[in-house]
Length: 156
Ligand SMILES: C[S@@+](CC[C@H](N)C(=O)[O-])C[C@H]1O[C@@H](n2cnc3c(N)ncnc32)[C@H](O)[C@@H]1O
Image (cartoon, rainbow, N blue to C red; front, side, top):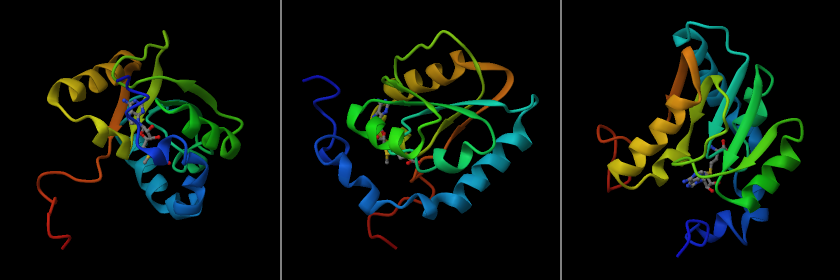
């Protein structure tokens, strides 16, 4: 089975429904928090940013006010959703474990999509992708929804 065939239906044939479930306005505060984290940690001015697993582009819809964004996602259908929200951003079809754009960015951002790295080997590949696309002094920010310290199976 190919990686694309393994995508959940919400990222595939149901992707057009994504904006009904996930409103870009709801991402304003967290996008600002991520931006502040990035510029505080960066040793270079942040003018360009690569997002890996950018999905429908909700964080990007806010981050693009601060810098030039390149958005990579495995799902062609989610890229279509993001293109309609963020027509001014570059969109690239690719897998965060192996995509190579042949250029470097001031920052690399991997939001909740990092949760799709289901093994240490895949996570290492995604981190390598971030590394090879980063300029010296730049920042890679990974923001998983869950970490060991806060994960709960009871929902509390
Ligand atoms: C919840 S969405 C991301 C939403 C995004 N953080 C935002 O701000 O709108 C998760 C995305 O991860 C993408 N994804 C999953 N595995 C991937 C991979 N190996 N490489 C690139 N994108 C991947 C899915 O196609 C999906 O679009």
